[in-house]
Amino acid sequence: MKASEPLIRHQLAEFQLLVSADGGALTLSGVEETTVHVDYMRPKGDELCATCVLSDEDLAEMLRERIAVLVPSITRVEIHPQPET
Image (cartoon, rainbow, N blue to C red):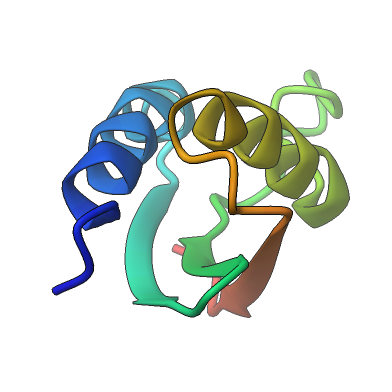
């Protein structure tokens, strides 16, 4: 485990609360020197709330910004979509 991994997991847990409210799930799948890999199980879309589910790009950018505050060496977050729930 990299020394920064607990910090990254903490940030991911905060975002898990956000996506789980709509039925989604996040899992840390790896950490490289400058990149965090996250599996994202997106919830099925809600026709009444098309913006409730974050896009992969928006989620990646939000995670990158939060993680980079604690782990400045992280410059990229890659989202790996998983089958919908």
